[in-house]
Image (cartoon, rainbow, N blue to C red; front, side, top):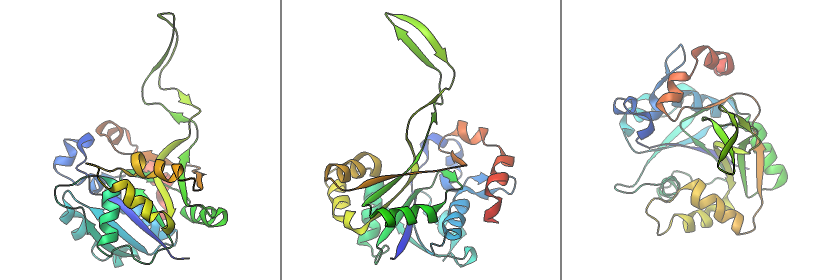
Length: 247
């Protein structure tokens, strides 16, 4: 079974402004060593035994290409697929990479969003995906901590309030895996839409087709660095403690 990886790192990072005015959002410095966020992701994927990685770029793509080159400095093989001019959408980014020959020959593809730090066991994800013969596997986190306060209202009266509670939800963390049998469905999902999205359009269509979509629950550290607020709250010691193994 040939497994490859694609990292989504083409967005403008509007939620990370003004930082993203100066950095590609996946290149913002992280941790005490001030490495780019994307470097931690590339190292994580390589650590888990995937050597072929395609970076799906767009905004400030040159910054990424200059830093990572062919990937040899990080022990992997990196190729690049730039998003089509004038068109947006994560599903379209994947289709563009397929059409450009950057993702040829895979049996399964790990897709990772470039604004999420994690210590995810990707080898465990691959093993489960293959064992269950899933068409798609979604990486989920149990007990999602809501980033805002939540009120319970009964008859126009607030009867309880909790600041940033943890709710029993299966939340996506920005990673998934799918088998090559899903590629035609990906193309369908990306066709005729202004900004076709993986989570909004592709995943639901696979489910609607009756194909097996499995959950893979992440254990341990993960952190969404997608906003200026979350970036400012990211503790460098937390990064070094949880991602030290990537050194």
